[in-house]
Image 1: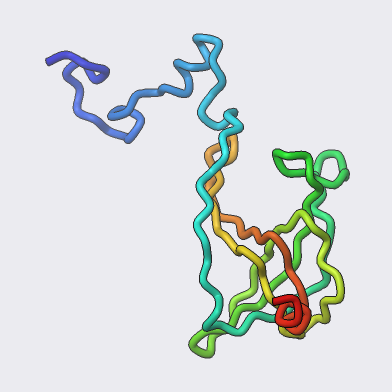
Image 2: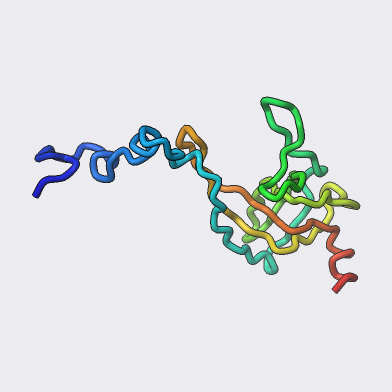
Length: 146
């Protein structure tokens, strides 16, 4: 059996799967990390947790241009620090929205509409997760709206 290894023992994952990103670029196709495909967003269940505002909403800025970033649909992005408490241990993380949250008080209870978590991979191979929500509102306003 002949293959990409040509009888060699694989030393890395790239040996097993090949350098398809390099091959794609040589063929004039976009590289793996240059693609603009949407990632799968997994829904989050927060109903049994305490969710608090950890900081005021801020525009998500592009570090190179200083301009506010937009999502794939052209909607401007905002980031709000959120504190989630479960089992007595608080966690702080940023949640992106396309609607600027209004009426939030740092330390006040909040409600996230349709919260999700998704993964990302940058062009240099760095990976991570980001949190998004359709909206962030003070908890009382969310209860009154339902």
